[in-house]
Image (cartoon, rainbow, N blue to C red; front, side, top):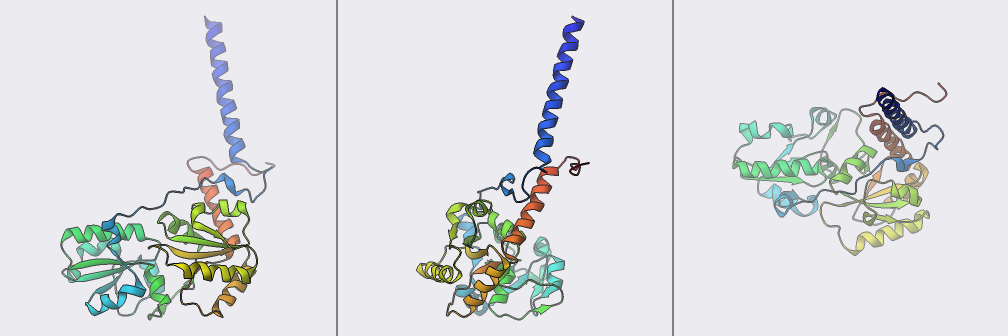
Length: 292
């Protein structure tokens, strides 16, 4: 009896040790290439908006003049740090979580200006504020402050602020979950495209020829507008390709302007590696360095 119990304990211990080895094999990838990006599991799920939520949106090109004519109150609802770095002169700055408590806004018609990649959060807030009955009307500006800047509206820059036409790797990641991006790639391989945080149906591969890529993108943009809230986002394989494509685009007579991934693919690869490390070590001790 005792011998059987000891044997069972040994089997359990061996099983645990084997499982631990399997975990370590997954965490320590010293023998694998640094660019093995497929280790990160990306979600294809994007935000699905109801008709009530879509009714909250206001597009700058079509509706901002009507909002101005009807006396809408623009409200900057970004966090304090973002609002300090980029000030919108004459626009009330109120953190989104405090809107319901501001008595001076009650009874007015509001347009909320976020960072641009917080659409799902602000749309839900808009619906809640409408249901509260405290305001005449509430809308959310699609594109947020980025749309405001691209429209040439006045701003005061006090800190580091990314160019209005550029999107960071973090914004690419956040915006993908909100269903914001229709991606156009220049020079990316199938493996790189597969590592993007958007479904393949929302990716247009333009090839590596920059001039032909620009022509193809212009044709695609001109066919029909994207359904809200999607916007075109161009991702180049290298910064040199990004710079050349951007300069070429500025020489073209095009009314619709896409967004561009800042730093091109290398910036996203660095960000993706950071996300891999965070996911691998969440709730676990850091793996030992190779050779130690």
